Amino acid sequence: MSKRKNAASEPPAAETLNYEQAVAELELIIDQMESGHTPLEQALADYERGVALLKRCRSIISQAEQKIEHLKASADESAASAAGAVDEACEDEDESDR
Image 1 (cartoon, one colour):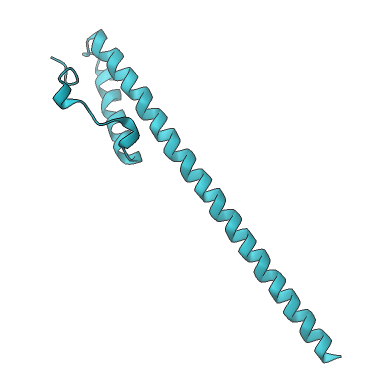
Image 2 (cartoon, helix red, strand yellow):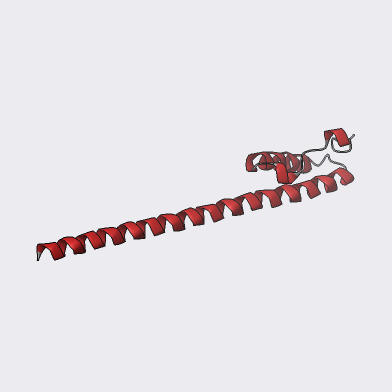
């Protein structure tokens, strides 16, 4: 009596889940497997699903890291531009004082 054998109750594709959903399902699978009451066939199916969920979580984390790096680079460029503008303004002020 497996939850996943019935096509109508198939879980959504791992690629469609957000991070929190994937982690929650992965935690459920881990709890079931740790209980030791899962038949071998189901344990293998759960393991396969867990691998897909883990891959999804890693992908989401990787995307978040890339976005952070992009934002950080943009912020660094903005700060450098602002610093350059301040330096130019100070140079212009120094020249006008002469």
